[in-house]
Image 1 (cartoon, helix red, strand yellow):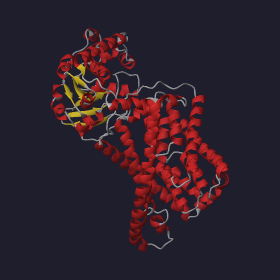
Image 2 (cartoon, helix red, strand yellow; image 1 turned 30 degrees about the horizontal axis):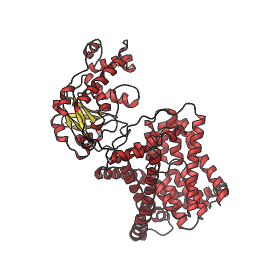
Image 3 (cartoon, one colour; image 1 turned 45 degrees about the horizontal axis):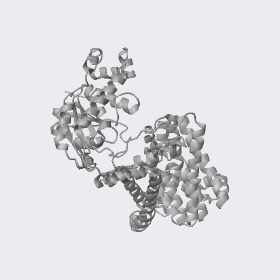
Image 4 (cartoon, rainbow, N blue to C red; image 1 turned 180 degrees about the horizontal axis):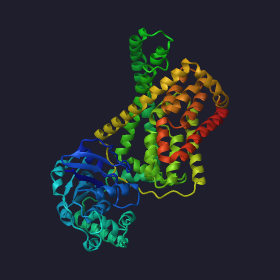
Length: 605
């Protein structure tokens, strides 16, 4: 017998992923910003097949997320509806729609701790009576209420529909495969109407109005405000959204992140992991084990333990140099996500981003891009139009360094004079702005409106933050290490067979004449095609060897930052944007990187 389908449904950012994890034992990225659960996730709980759906505000076909959620919900045997207790007016609209569909529903009334902190009380027994479905109060991060929820899954019921809907539904119930599809026809879902080739309903506005009135009545009867004073968190939330206070708070946050990564992690931690642990202890150990088996200068000596060796350069770069920086960045990003600050940054910067053809929602892939451009490119799906997705992807691949690359850049920039560090930062910002303005001017269309949830501001949960940091850092290790190994083999082959010198000579007009850099910089640029952070690490080695002056370091950093995306990002780029747009972005990045580097070299070197 096929397992019953237990479907999780709810608005964006209500904590569904935590419930999915608790039921199935499978970890799904738990985020405090909209748009994380783009794809559905499946797992098992007792006799149920558990399916998580994208966060939606209603069951319809207005966008991809709603279409996916609708199709899954139509197949459901039981719906676990996760509701944000602080935003009942928004979330219960979906709840009532699920009830009107005739599906057995049980409600997890989540974030009950926030209800108390906001001075609110909810009469849950009365709400159960009015809606006609069981309601279990929960606090997802603490797993509070989860056992009661599991025990009561079997008590899910079809609830109380809005007045008069049954008569309307009866007209189509013998036409459709699933009774719930009758409601979709009434609500003018074009895909369902086309599926059954019936005359569409004209009742959507009326049904929506009735549903809104009913939910307002339920809230009026069950929700009470007990406190008159505004809490500090509410005040802080408003300060973050107002430009006069929000911009200083954002700048302070960025400055803190810079010193945390550039001073504490890049100097103190990397100093120990790269120089002492990997550069001394590990290097001496691996040389004593492998060195006696091969003659120095032989091919296998160079391949395994040479300057670009698989057992020397790769673990030193990955574990000693990059991993501490990646862990540090993802830790900070997890704090921003879990606190609810990311959506506030999006709202704060909305007007600014519309000038470059985007809206505030683009802040999310942009900030994620500092973690991994590959992941951020996928996240551009949350943007409202193809035009915005192209502009965001172009800017991501061009001017947003990934976490590992950023870490190396911070290390190198921290050793430069302040005016040279400023020159690097202003150049990258200028390229970002100019390219964005140009694309906004040249591409037809305009920015879409910003529609984003502002979740409650809260202290990050350390367990959630550490889980995210571990998951994303492990993903970095598993993705980066094989590519670094491929790069090490490639560089060794090029060096051993004297091909690298030929390439360096062939590219001398660009690297030496245009960029005014030593020809050895060609090697990090080749490494950068494999992975940007790989190339940045190569530049770091050249500066340690004294081959780059401070001015040349700035030029090289600008070029490696604006350089083409790494192999993994390029593959996703072709998949997400199609080959025409991907080729345009790839070639455009090359041209802009070397043109900007050449101009900067003429000014500085």
